[in-house]
Image (tube, rainbow, N blue to C red; front, side, top):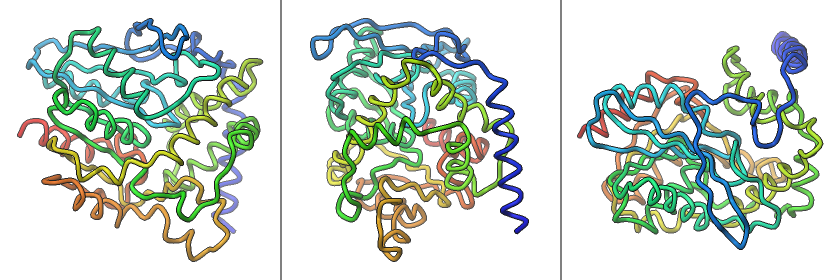
Length: 330
């Protein structure tokens, strides 16, 4: 009863908070990122595409570059503390918004694939004249990072996967949901429902005020008249994640790899659509998935963070950054 009341009061507070913030446009032109944003303009699938990115250079460079790839429910802005820590130790940090996300283009009729997103990222690095880099991917970004590493092994010095999704093949046990239905699901999203989901699945019902920003960035545009475009892109990328597993190719990764896994994470695409509770309970168990994945990636290291969920670099930054910098320095 007390727990239910606590969650109810949090949702009331969320409603009040969300009403105080401006409606975001679908290119986030009215939201300021932590660092200056540049744009890479290019042609892709016969469309004019604009890819937003931050390129942060350290005061004392060590000659190394790291690329940070965001998750599906996020954009580059949530990497701020990670950027600051990495530039402090000499890294040049490049943070793109993938196409369909953040301040980047939201194209109609775009064929989303991990190969396409990896290729877009590689073209950005070519433009910036970066031929060697560390790749760090969180959540969906971990799937992009994996595909990038497989496609461009000569570019990747080291690979870091932070609570990547795609460590299991959900389509084996979960029913397929059409893009049309996914669009409808996206159109029903609100600040309150999104916060309730993240509260339960990301943060174990322990909310901190700073988490509100990431809910706002995900839902601040739901009342914008062009939000249907975002909803369509979100549906397409959900379909990409569900239908394009990368776990069968982990064995082909040759780059030195670090897995940072919050073991309380229970993220599993399609889990809510599985009717059998016994099957649902076995999905998204990161306390096992991290260990299984480490065995698949030759010579990889695994750092497990107990009682941490899907967002180690947000929820437990100090516990996240130390193993990351240790790995980068060795």
